[in-house]
Amino acid sequence: MLERIKQLLEEVSQLTAANPEEAEALRIRYLSKKGEISRLMEDFRTVPAEMKKELGMRINELKNRATERINELKAAAAAQETTADDVDLTRTPYPIAMGTRHPLTIVKNEIVDIFSRLGFTLAEGPEVEDDWHVYSSMNFADDHPARDMQDTFFVEAHPDIILRSHTSSVQARVMERTQPPIRVICPGRVYRNEAVSARAHCFFHQVEGLYVDKNVSFKDLKQVLLLFAQEMFGPETQIRLRPSFFPFTEPSAEMDVSCTICGGKGCSMCKGSGWLEILGCGMVDPAVLEANGIDSTIYTGYAFGMGIERIANLKYQVKDLRLFSENDVRFLEEFTAAN
Ligand code: DAH
Image 1 (cartoon, rainbow, N blue to C red):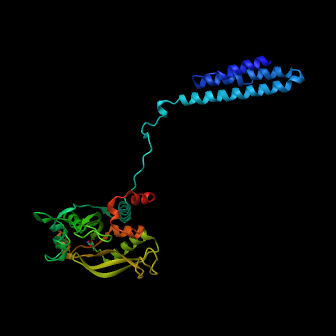
Image 2 (image 1 turned 120 degrees about the vertical axis):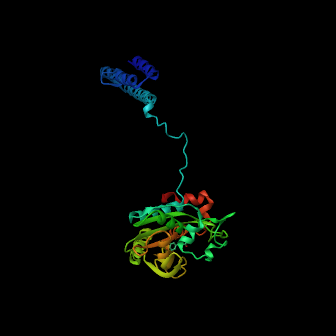
Image 3 (image 1 turned 60 degrees about the vertical axis):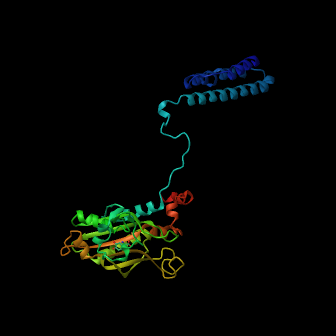
């Protein structure tokens, strides 16, 4: 019997299987109830008592070796079985770092999303504009200081062609081709001839809103802006409107939200006032409606405009405006989770 065990041990150590079926056949041959090892166990019963200990150990060893070997063969055969269907050819051969959305894109998307839910549709206009759409049609007087070289980038040799200094130009673009009801939200990049510093940049981003229809009132404007502020900064947020002046709105206002950091108690962010200014707004000046082909005796409208960098600063406390355009990946990667 010892001989037979040795022989089987030898056999087991040399087993091979080309596929899972062959490996299974080996399991049946050696390890099943009617297999070689079970047969040995039967014979074992008739062995004289003094040999039982030694033989028992040997049979156990054989059984363990056979199980180990056959399991190995099964695993190897299964691994080889992979077919073309199991291979994901679209996977990259090496891990690639995923990009992140730019914080300004995140905030812009959020603003657009909030107003879309209120029924506003998206409108865009060109960054290289003419004086009419940026200034004249928006009721800027010929000698308004914003037209000055200090503010506006002119395209050389074309005093009429400029880089838009605000997205209000898109209001004009929309009104000249559409009759009311108009309800649009217009995100975009704007340019101003300013020295670049932590607090000012020669380009930045704005979102413009415009609503023109019959019976649009200041009350509607206030309600929409309150909803926006609470969606953007949280349901506890309060707003206040302060009288202001813009050439294209009458009356005009600036809107503050209760401080996003201290909630209104006063802190360094709001310089102790409890309020943060976030946008300009007002009722569209009838002169603007008329300049853009809309009958101001029938229609009224409201408009508002806000800086995306400003809102992003309030949400993420970015201290230096330049970070938004430097594309430093260490800064950009901080916004991974915000996607
Ligand atoms: N265009 C203004 C700016 O660049 C922002 C603005 C204020 C837009 C009031 C508006 C508005 O539509 O009603 O500073």
